[in-house]
Image (tube, rainbow, N blue to C red; front, side, top):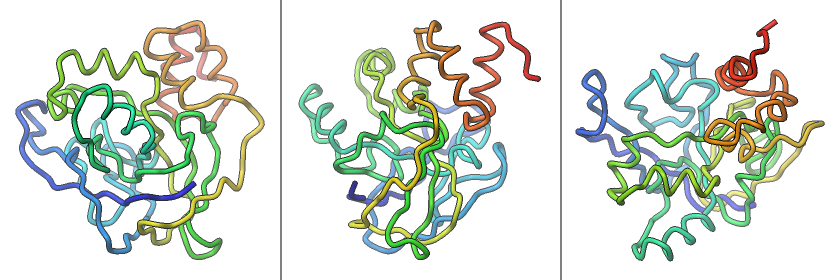
Length: 225
């Protein structure tokens, strides 16, 4: 896998955010500079895992489980063809635009080493992205949320296990794959229209984002214990 670009937010006000959170960081642009990657604080206060990035609504975005968002360039290329418009790296709000990476087939708990071991950060796949109305407003495409959801290829959020620096052109190596077959695409499908997959995603156990696990347990009528 190759890291094509590292993308940081250009914050702006948006009418598509809620009344409390008028600023959004969904407009992300590539940077040629190295970027520090660090573990942010808990959900609700933590922000982004990339130094210099901005999270507009900390209630729903950022924090430990959504520290870094990765998306495949191949998926952007597919959407370019379908939408008939140019989609530059970062336009979907992703921090890392990847090449030759089956991002949506990554397993929950899979670990990615960026750059050389001991120098670049170690990231762990935690969950998938769920599209919101800010994303829909930003793209400005008719029926965008429905179309994006139907594709089931929403990209992956990652936790930061070991901090470090990243920059465009870094190699990305999968150094650990957990003992289950729950991909981020499975998580997305289970929570957006295929509830029969809920028991399956629960086999990932505590590697799941706690909120995702809670939702899956609640919908299957199972206990958190």
